[in-house]
Every structure is written in structure tokens, then in C-alpha cells.
Length: 447
Image (tube, rainbow, N blue to C red; front, side, top):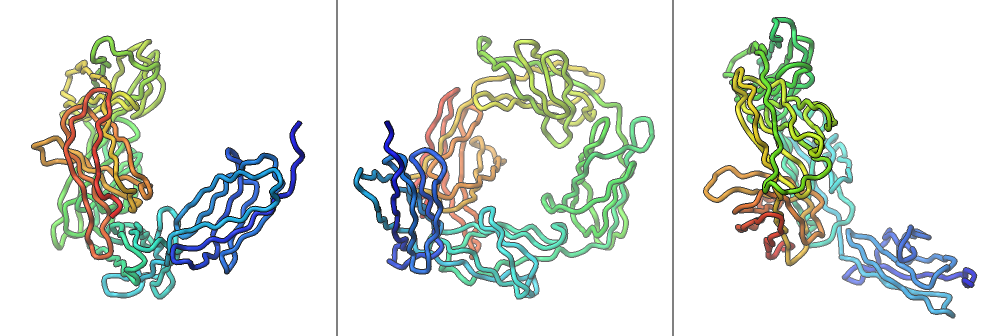
């Protein structure tokens, strides 16, 4: 027979590593596995107190504060009616600073983010984060007010409480005088409807567009190389680059579809006896994506399909732009495969998409990363181009696993720039085999 519940008083204090009481720390009291029974907060003296009705002799007590976390497993004796605990958290202080524009004027409607937590900026441009551990860099992102297209892109900055006060500078984008007018025309000459359009300046600066059936317009374009990508409701899309010259007030584009092409994709396992899963995700990628079309054994729509290889291993990609590149790849946790090609007029080719077991790189750090956001660059030896991947939620972690095609890879990990513009990086080279993990050691990640 189970013993009846009995009251248990739980008291304690939370201090930082400089012996100062920590107010507002959160305490959760729970069974070893399960939801908290009681949640408490420390007072101005760092003290907490609560009572539970004890149902089992083991408790899990978690304290959080100053960006730190401490967990205790406590065994309560049969005659014990009170326990007292002390938790130690890292010393912390807010990161304070200013958000200013290019003319040193405050940007009072901006929002600063620590992780996913927003922090308001007052009319004087001032902000203050919740307390952050001393000595540990924290990644800060800034969302400018109004339209993103009104501002130059803002890189995340990495700062410590000791850096306070910091200045985060936003730069208003110079407003150009040019108006863009794009005519969208279907194969038969009728007006063509766009599903979405992305207009970028100098490769990565988004600019607002207005869509109507048969046309795309934009205003305020300045001198630069521009990139317009259009996904259409029917037929193939467009991917165009053009230049706006100084003093231009109008730029016109006429985009007319040609008769779209199609290619048949056949899944080919390598080796031939490789067992494919019951369902396999296949997606169309690239600047101009085709539409995957299935028959029996497939489900999905548009650029994304789930293939059932046991039923059929072929699918068709339609609405490809003639003489333009296309790419199709497999997405699966243990398999890789990608095929690229050119949609030749009237070719109706059958293209093999080789599917094979993937390898993985396991990046293992000797010290936990202190930066929440990192960038991972991967390249084949002897090549200039490197794939850049954004890694989020890395603060406190010591490892992560990355799926990749087997072979030799050079890698580099970079932290966000700090308030001085400096960043840290680590690099190396690994040989990845089929179906296995290779360890890439990262030394001194937390420093």
C-alpha cells in the first residue's frame, strides 16, 4: 500500500558566482519524470519557499536565472519534512546600448532580439536586455521599423555585458528614382499571373513589389545590379538579372513564357540492392523550379512529392524553362541524391537520380559554444564556392551532426561578428564515408 501524501516544505536561495542574491530566479519542483508540481520565484534576497504534498521520495528541482540552469535530484528521507537548497548561477548583467541610424539619430521603433525574445527600443534609441552571463558573448539581432526594404541588411552582432553600452547602427537605404515595370506574358500571348515575385538588390537586399495579373511593378530602385525571380501560377517561372544605371527613371522588362519542357526522373539506388524506404521525399530546387507530377504510388503537389519506390520509381518534372538549368534532389535522414541538368527543347529525356546512403560529419567541441548563431561553410578541396549554412540555437551545445554526400570536405565554422566587427572561426578537412559518421573536432569553441 502506498503511503499517504505528506507535506514537505522546500526553501532555499539562489546566488550568483559572486555570492550575490539573485532576484526573480525561477524554481520548478517536479517528480523525476513529469510536469512541475510547483513553480516558484526568488524574492529580492534570492530566497524561495514553497510546500508540496510528497507522493514519492525523489524530486527533481530545477533553478533558472541569469541565463543559467541548475538541476538537482533530491531523495527525501521518510521522516524528513523540510529540505533546504542553495543554487549558484553565473554572474550576469544586462547588455545595454543604442540603436542609431547612419546620421547618429535614434531609431526608436526598432526591436532588438536576444534569441527569440524581443526587447523594445525607447524613443531615445536605448535598449537593455535581461541579465546575461558575464564574459559570455550573446547574439543580438535587430529588426528595423517599417518595411525591411527601407533599410540595408543588418548583420547580427555578438556582445557581452562588459561591452556595454554598445551601438547598433542601422542604415537607411538610399531611395532611387527608377520605376520598374515588368510585363508577364503567357505562351499564347495572354496576361500571365505571378504566384510570387522576389526582387533583390545587389544579391541580398529585398525590395517590395506589387503584383497584378500580367504585370509586376516596383518603385524607388537605385543604381545597382538587380535580381528578379518570378514563380507563376501556370507554366515555367523566370529568373532575370538586370542593371539600373545612374539617373534612370524607368526600366521595362518583357517576360514571355516559351513552351515549357518536361523531364522524367528515375530513382536509381546505388548499390542496386540498397533498400529504399516506403516513402521518399523528392523536391525540385533551383532558381526556376519545375512542378513534379506523379501517378500511382506518389502523393504531394507542386515542387514537393513523396514517392513510394515499391510502387513506381519514376516521376515527371514539368513546366521547366527551355534551355535553363533544373535540379531535383532527395531529402531523407540517411539517404542523399541530386541530379542537375538542362531542359532541352523537345528532348523529353529520362534522367537518373542516384540515391545512396549518406555520410555525416559530427562536429564535437571541447567547450560548449557560447554563441547562439553560427555559420557553417562546406566546400570540396580545390573549389572556391562554399555552401553556407546558418546554425541557430547553438548556445550551450557541444556537438551537432550534419548530413552530407560522401567524399572529402573542407569545413569552417564562424561566429557572428561582435560589437567591434570581429568574429572567431575554426576549420578543418574530413573524409566522409558512406553510411558512417566522421568526427570533426572543434577546439576552444567556448572561448
